[in-house]
Image (cartoon, rainbow, N blue to C red; front, side, top):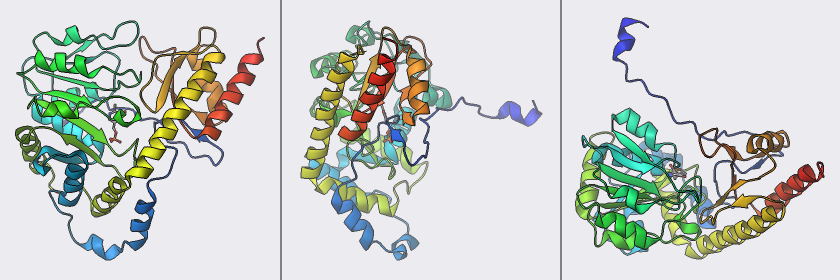
Length: 354
Ligand SMILES: *Cc1c(COP(=O)(O)O)cnc(C)c1O
């Protein structure tokens, strides 16, 4: 190692799901929405001109913040936006997790949490999920420097009931509690209403999954005015113009078409439930997912083997070579036709052995 390298802030980065590009592929590996964004987004894109890009965007992202505040019935001072919820979460870790005591999050969870903790030098202790992959609320009652978990959890899809979240909040009034609701629109109950009662609760959501805009990078958070002000102070000390002009304009359009949003999320939920039954008929086991993916295991077929076999057929799902979950596959819910192809392949694969 060269002398100068000793002072480098070295990190082991997060590994995002692969982004393969084959004409015939069925991409069920990064929880994208199989349906296009709301039609208004396409319309607005057609009206856009490169001339708009000459100027910096609004630093406070006012148009999108106001639209979000209106949609969720909040004041604009209670809303923060960022470049995907990854940006919002990273900023929240940096702003709120500044204690000598460890931050708590589940052992099986979004694999970016330990990466941010490493990058920012935040101490953390993982709390094991139980055998059914549920968060055990009592594990979060001990002394800590902050709490963060996704609800529903990723990659399990398991929901923590709102009453348990409130119990965790009651035991954690002296630290910031972050609930990462990336998948909340697929059937779980949001903790948004609890932000009224708990000024230390930050609820984070995203346009990437339920609003089919992963490519645009829009995330947002709700919380008390005090909490959001702290977040904005940190953001303005880092990069003032995080939200680009196209994202601001198109994000507003996506929020305006609520009928389309409700229709597409309902379709994904229906496809999830049907796929779950069909996978169960093939012997797969899964929990009660409230997300746009299923987390499944098969008693007779190693997940890694299934993952490789699917991959050869250009059906991409996610496999994590990690303790406790290395025999599971996370399968994003696609269109009905895509799920039919997945099921047909698995039927064939399993029948070969009988
Ligand atoms: C997808 C995901 C995110 C990040 O999504 P963005 O595209 O950055 O908005 C955050 N948390 C969890 C649990 C996710 O699965």
